Figure (tube, rainbow, N blue to C red):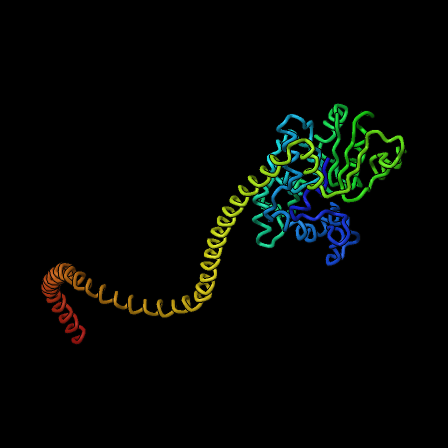
Amino acid sequence: MAGAGISTSAGIPDFRSPKTGLYDNLEKFNLPNPQAIFSLDYFKENPVPYFTVRKEMLLGNYKPTPCHYFIRMLAERGLLLRHYTQNIDGLERIAGIDPDMMVEAHGSNRVGHCLDCSAEYTHKWIKNILRRDQIPKCSAEGCSGIIKPDTVFFGQRLPSRFFELTDQDFEKCDLLIILGTSLKVQPFAKLPINVPDETPRLYINMEKNVSGSKHPLAVLVFGGGFKFDEEDNYRDVFLQSPCDEGCSKLADLLGWGDELRYLVTKEHAKLEQEFKEEEQHCAIEASVSVTKVSVITTQVPVSSTQVPVSSTQVPVSTTQVPVSSTQVPVSTTQAPISTTQNPVRDVKSSSNKSHNQKTSQIGQKEHGTKMKPNASRNQKSAAKTRKK
C-alpha cells in the first residue's frame, strides 16, 4: 500500500506535510477549506484551483523514485501480489510496474472525461490544453463541459476494481508493506485490518499517524489497528524514515541493494533522454504554433486593410468605367461590323425604297390617268352649276 510519500523525492509534494504539503499552500485560492480543491461540487463551480495546482504535475518531467523501482523488483521476482496506490501521478507505470499488478484506488490522469457528455480525452490532449494556460473543455459539437481527469474526488466512488480485488488479495497476503501514507482517507485507510492476524505489517513513513486501537470506530477514523508500542505486539513494525531510505535499507537486507541502485541509475538515464526528445518535439510544435500565430497575426492587418482594399475597389470599379468605356470602342469596333452588315440591310431597304418609289410612281401614273377624267367631269359639273 502506498501514498504520496513515495513520490515526494521526485519533486511531487504530498498533502499533509507542514509547510511543504499541498494543503498548506492553497491560501491564494481562497478556498472554503483545503479539501475543497478535490471536491467535485467545487470543481464544477471553479476548476481553476485544481488545474493550477495539477498543471505542474501533469506537465512536469518527474522520474520514479527508488521506492517505485523497489516495488518493481518485488513484481519481477514474483513476490508482489498487488500494489495498491492512492497516487494519481502515474509514476508506478513509468517505473515499469505491470498495470495488472496495480490497483489505482484514486484513479489516474491517463484519461479524462467530459462532466456533461462523458466524451473521453487523452492525457496528451489535456496536457496540450494546459500548456496554453487554458481550462480543458469539451470540443464535442454542442458541448462545452469541463474535462475532469479520471481521478477520484471526495465523495466519489472508488473504481470497481478496488472493491473486486481487496477481499481476495488481502486474505492471501503474507506481508503487508505500507509506504508513505497517513492512512487518513477511507476506505483505503482500513485495508490493513483485512489481512490475516498472523500477517506481518511494515509501516514506513515520516510520522506515526495511525491508531493502535482495534476499536471499529477508531479504525474507521484513524485506520490501522496497529500495536506498535504494545507489549503483546508480535507483527507490527514502524520505521520512521523517508520511503526511499526505508526501501533501500530493506533492499540491502535482502541483498538487492546494488541491483536497485543500478536499476534507478539506468532507468533515470533513459528517462532523461526521453524527456529531452519530448522537449525538442514540444519546441518544434511551439515554433510551428508561433508560425501559425504569426500568419494569423499578419492576416489580421490584411483583413483590416481589406477596408482600404474594398475602398480601393471603388477606384477599381471606377476604372471599370473606362474599361467599360473602352468596351464602347470595342463595341464601336464592332459597329463597323454591324455597319458592314447595315449596308446589306440598307441595300435591302434601298432596293425596297426604289421599289416603293417605282410602285408609287406607277401608282401616281395610274392615279394620274384616273384623276384626269374625274377632273374633267368635275369641271363640267361646275360649269353646269354656273350656267344654272
